[in-house]
Image (cartoon, rainbow, N blue to C red; front, side, top):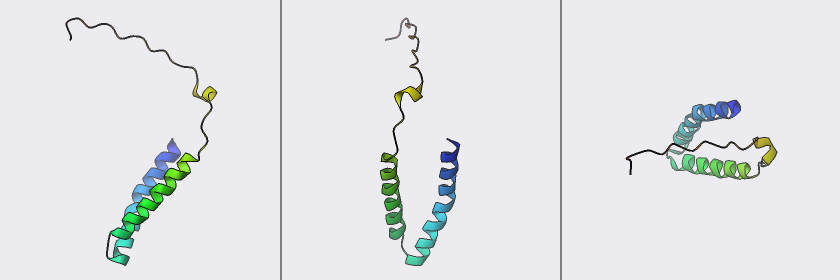
Length: 74
């Protein structure tokens, strides 16, 4: 979880720099939007390739207690 947080923070810091540089180079935001869309699709595809965890690694199922019945509430 910590690694994901660090990577998101790095993306938040570097993304505007890259987008601004692309805007200056092309005098338009369209290339930066296309680039971000391509990166998103690539990341989504990579996420689909990640292995699923086994059911045994999720730990035992937790049974939650029932909520008490409330009186006078419809």
